[in-house]
Structures are given as structure tokens and as C-alpha cells.
Amino acid sequence: MAPPVIGIDLGTTYSAVARLDENGRPETLNNAEGDKLTPSVLLFDDNNVIVGKEALKAIATDASHVAMCMKRELGQRFFRQELEGRHYPPEALQAWVLNKLRLDTSKIVGPFEKAVITVPAYFDEVRRKATQDAGYIAGLDVLDIINEPTAAAIAYGHQQGILDDMLSRNRPMRLLVYDLGGGTFDITIMEIASGAFVALATDGDVRLGGQDWDQRLVDFVADDFLKQFGVDPREDPNTAGRLWRDCEDAKRTLSARSKTTIPCDYQGHASRTEVTREQFEKLTADLLNRTSFTTRQTLQAAGLTWDDIDRILLVGGSTRMPAVVDLLQQMSGKEPDTSIAADEVVAHGAALRAGILMQNDTGERPRFNIKNVNSHSLGVVAVDPATKRPRNAILIPRNTPLPVSAKRTFKTQKDGQNSVLVQIVEGESATPDHCVQVGRCSVRDLPPELPAETPIEVRFHYEENGRLQIKVAVADAKKEIRHEINRENSLTREQLNTWRRFISGAST
Ligand code: AMP
Image 1 (cartoon, rainbow, N blue to C red):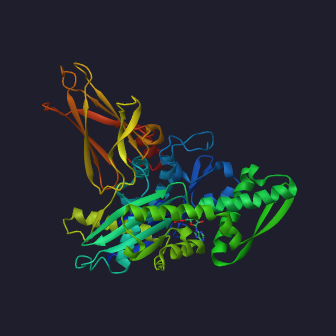
Image 2: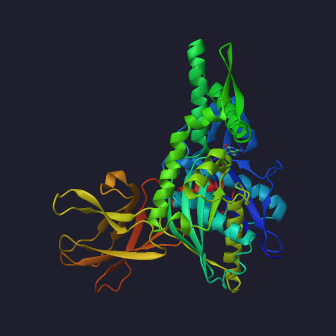
Image 3: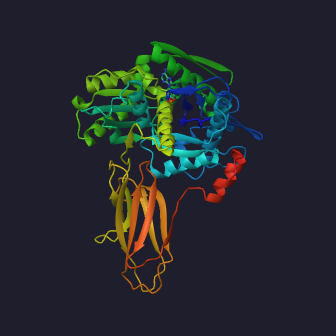
């Protein structure tokens, strides 16, 4: 029997899994609770880790044992909150979510390992690596990491039958994908042309999503409560958790109705705060403005105007807020496309991508290609000759089509030098401290007796999935030179294996 073809949307607040059915059509799979969406939330209950709906419920009673929004902290060494006396790396916490998805899915499709996982287009290299590591810990064989908006565009292309007539299309179709999820915002402009999905430009914010809208309501109700009774319901984690849950619920209600009431009980006092949609939109106007600013900038970066955009796709649960649709209508003068299931489309695209990759294994011709751009500039730390200060020497500017290679030549400083250290950063700032530290690449075992000033060529290869490879060459040296990226906040191979055995029980 053919192995199952699985795509996973690992969301900040909710995750989803899809497979391709026997006709090659994507379908969302239910989890063990019978739901299509699994809250990306963990409850640490003595020696048990409970994932999903039950963990989300516990936010109102057991908040200090609940971990959520781990995706926002990928790339950090430890998750902000201590859980049962222990600090966990965010990728291990994400792995618990993936492990549940894997176990629940295998009840339907049988045991499997291969899967494609999605990430926000705006994720940097460090966060992509952390996501891949989370997949490994969860016992998965991660076939590819693809961008959420690309996945959405693929699923849309499939649904609209564009994939089938793509090779014969003579005019490219341009999509603007506006993706506002629970914790991240992504904007990507894609072109569908002659058998390929090509990203033209991408931008976003990894710390902007539905959670921020929830927080505004929490603060609104809590400030009102504080004024009335002189006590702040946010100071108790369980009350704050309950209030957040009620506010998230109220936010969803306000997408359908013009007003709602949010209850709050704390220390024997009770309030019921009425909120209208208009008030809610005023409270959150600056958040929405951040998305419109980024949208305009991305359009500009692609060298396009709204007239060049054929379709606007809305992805992510937060695009159900009427203010989002209004904003895009106003900005573009076009009607956004709401024909796709905002919560499921990303997982569907991931499954379609997995299908292509698994087809490649069998030697069949792929139906489409994906061409991405890098979302952040990649550089190395160099010394500014004028100021003698360290600065970010950009090698691969953002929005460069991937894969791409770039090289930089370093020189040894003294005779017989044995190693060279290259510090890699990602970001737009000239100051390395304001960039993400990808890591250091130490080039060791240089041939003996090299004279000072010997050129050493370091070649960066940015892969299609936004992951970095490094190759090193010394003129005249035939031998292979050892190099490795020592990542600032990454788990070592041994640590990954320990977590893998612990969380998924998979062999290493
Ligand atoms: P996603 O990560 O795409 O699943 O999006 C989850 C986010 O969408 C959460 O912040 C939800 O609160 C939000 N969301 C889901 N449905 C609605 C709705 N009807 N109105 C407003 N926000 C929603």
C-alpha cells in the first residue's frame, strides 16, 4: 500500500493535519477528540503532558501548568515560563503538539513518519531549524518546511483547478496572500505561472496575531474591573486565564454580531462589560494598521500595484474579523476571496506539497514547482574599515529568489593559522546586535603552514526551504575542510535524540 501523504499546519494557537485521499485531493483529518483543529496548548499534569482541547480548558483552573504560544518563542533557548519546576526548550514543547498530531493521525492512516510542516513565510532561519528539530523530536521525518502562504496558494490553485491548466497558462496569475493567524502575520505576493508557484515578495510580523486582539479585550475588561472594585483580575493566573478565554470567545462573537458582554469574577466581585464591535475595532485599530502598512510595503517591494493583483486570499482564523475584510477592500478596491477554508487551507497545501515530494521519489514528473524568496537578509559580521566597528555585511538581501548561493572571502591573519571563525546574522540592520544571531561557523583543520592572508572562500547556500548550508574552500587545498555552524540557541544532536526518545519514543 502507498504510504500516507501528510501535511501539518503547526499553528501558534491551533494546528491541523491533512492527507491526500486516493484521488489526490486534500482532506483535513480529525484528531482523537473528533475535531479538525487541535489547540497548540500543553498541560503539564504531574508526569503527564496533555495536548489540545483539555489543556486549553485548564487555562482557567491550572494556568501555571499550561504552556501556549510556544511557536512565538522558537529560536529562544528556553520557553519563558517554568513548568513544574523545569525550563523547556520551545522546540520540545512544539514536539509534544506534533507528537499528538502524529499519534492521532496514525489511528486513521496507520503508522507514518514522512510529513511536510508549514511555517510563516516571515520565519527566519533559526526558527525554521527549530521547527524541523521539533518534527524530529516528535518522531517525524520532515520532508520539507514550506511557507504557510505558499501552502495556501497551492491549495487554492488546486481547488480552483488552476494547477491542472497551469502549464498551458500564458498569463501569470498574481495572488496576494494575507495571513493573520493566532500569533503571526504574513503577507506574501505569489505568481502562479508555467508550472511554478513563485513568491515575489514577503514580509510580516512573527509577534502579531489574534492573541494581540484578545489581549486588548482582556485589558479593556480588566481596567474597567480595576476601576470599579480596586482589584486587578490579571494578577491571578487562573482568573486571567478564564478572562482570556471569555475574551477570545467574545472576539469571535463580535465577528458575527455587533455587541457582546464579557463576564469577570474575582475576589467576590463580579462585572459584566458590554463591548460593541465598533469599540473593539477602535481598541485594535493600531494592530490592523500595522498589517496595512506591511501590506503596502510588500506590494511596493514586489514592484506592483493593486491593479496587478488578480486575487486576494484570506488565510488564518483572524481574517474572519470583518475589519480585516473591510481593510483589504478599502486598500485594494477588490473583493477578497473567502472561498477557501481559512483554518484548513494551509494543511491542505502542505499535503499537496508532500504528494509532490513523494511522487518525486517514484520518478513521476511533478505537477508544479515552488520558488521562494528569503524573508530576511543574510549576512556576516565584518569590521567596518572606516569606524573599526562590527557591522552586518549583507551577502543575500531579502526577497532574493531561492535557492541562492553567495560567497565571501576571508583572509587568514597570521602564518600557520589553523582556523577561521565566521559569525552569521540575519536581519536588515547594519548593527549585528540588532539582527538574529544564526550562529558561528568555525572552519577548522586548515592545511598546515598556510601563509598569512591566504584567502578562504566561504560559500553560503540558502536552500529553497529557507535553510542554510555552508561550504568552505581554501585555494589550492584539495582536502575537505571541516566546518560546522554552532548555533546560539539550538539543541545539539545528542540533546535532540534525548528529547526524541523521551517525547515520541522513536528510535534515534
Ligand atoms: P489560526 O492560527 O489560523 O488557526 O487562527 C487562530 C486565530 O483565529 C485565533 O486567534 C482565533 O481567536 C482567531 N479566530 C478564529 N475564528 C475567529 C472568528 N470567527 N473571529 C475572529 N477571530 C477568530
